[in-house]
Each structure stands twice: as structure tokens, then as C-alpha cells.
Image (cartoon, rainbow, N blue to C red; front, side):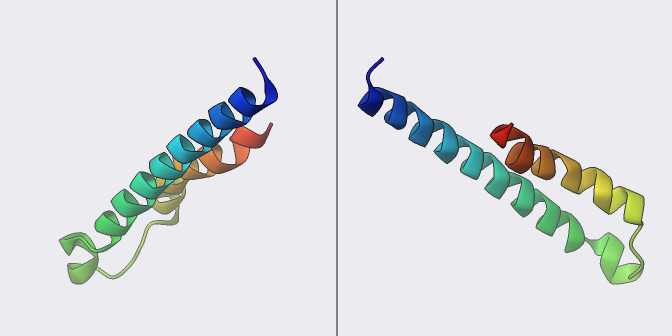
Length: 64
């Protein structure tokens, strides 16, 4: 594979990761805007961490 094709593949992979990250952030925002938090404004830290972990893995583990 020549260098240009390699870069094109990397761009494609990064665009896919950005799209997945955007989807995860959107899902998390929808969750935070749900009735659960309008009625009970407390947030379970473990729940938030559990929902953010896939985003963290997507963004950070991809560089390893």
C-alpha cells in the first residue's frame, strides 16, 4: 500500500471514530436530559462513569 492510500485509510478510520464518539456523546446528553434528572437532580457517579467509559476507550485506546 502506498503512502497516499495509507493516509486515506487513516482518515477513514478517524472519521469513523469521530462519528462513533459523536454518537456516544449524543446518547449521554440524551440520558442527562431525561426525566430521571428533571425529577431527581442527583447523579450516580458510577452510572456516569459507566456511560463515559466507551467514549474514553474509543478516544484514548485508539492511539495505542
